[in-house]
Amino acid sequence: MMERAYGFDEVAIVPGRETADPEDIDISAAIGGVKLELPILASAMDGVVDPGFAAVMGSLGGVAVLNLEGVYTRYENPAEVLQEIISVPREEVTPLLQKIYKAPVKEKLVAEVVSSIKEKGGPVCVSSTPLSAGRLGPVSREAGADIFCVQATVLTVRHTSTRYTPLELDKFIKDMGIPVILGNCVTGEVAYDLMEAGASAVLVGVGPGAACTTRGVLGIGVPQVTATMNCARARDRYHKETGRYVSIITDGGMTVGADICKAFASGADMVMLGNTFARAKEAPGRGYHWGMALPHPYLPRGTRIRVGIMGGLEEILFGPAKTDDGTQNLAGAIRLSMSSCGASSVKEFHEKSTLIIAPEIKKEGKIYQRAQSLGMGK
Image (cartoon, rainbow, N blue to C red; front, side, top):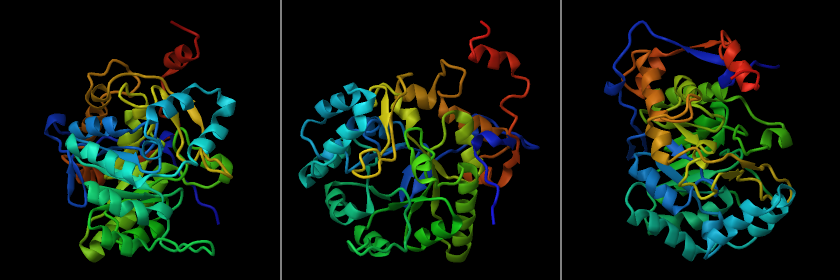
């Protein structure tokens, strides 16, 4: 059996019968009891989020997720390590990162980076793989973390191994006592299982990230519109059955405001972005971005890419936009798209928006734009 699945470039949002003033629209979100003015998270990637970036993101109303198994918890001076990653020739990136990420994660540094973000205000969200969560979770919580994320290429409640004892997600969440995000997944069945385990939010997406090569290496994944819809249906069913609302976070595959708006129309409560924020002047990668699974010692599933720097974080989130390509003023794009459907909140957008299959919509009538993008016109 084979089903058709859809990505962002293949669908469009149908404007509604009524519209609303964009300034009246509430785009706030929540992860458990943690309220966010912006429904946007920055990905837990070393080239995107360091303690300084996390503090700025928090001050602007969103939240940045810090990777607890990254260079910031392995090295006393991560700036030197980042410079080495950025400077090395492309063909040497994978071996270098495999070497760099062999250094042990130090619990002392985990506590220090969490505390440094906490001191600057705003929510502190940190992430680790399931294998390390049992050790790093309590350390980060005691240091002041507000949200913990257990993240894997594919995360399921039913995991088996003869080499180690798998993390019991339900017990871990109960012991942590703070909201826990679980991911990643792409099907309603797995999303529902993660909700039953106690997740406050579920990450949706396997392999869509700009610096991720999982789909090319392993051949797994589901396009993000279909994946988000699958998991959103599971969220609605779980909410109806239990009365507990679990946020859906579409993670990856979005490059412009239109993609983000389509993610919300597909049922997302929030979005997680990596490539977009790697291009901020506050990002530690200074215009470079690399996948989380790139340092894998046996089967790397990422690459280092040059994304450049397009502006400050505030400009990317709130504008005013200096480009016409949908990469700046993301909050404004969300509000205006929602207003076109007469939705006053993200949840209302789920109810009022309609998606249609429209693979040609980006090309229709755009002959001159396409010609100029190919260098055929001025």
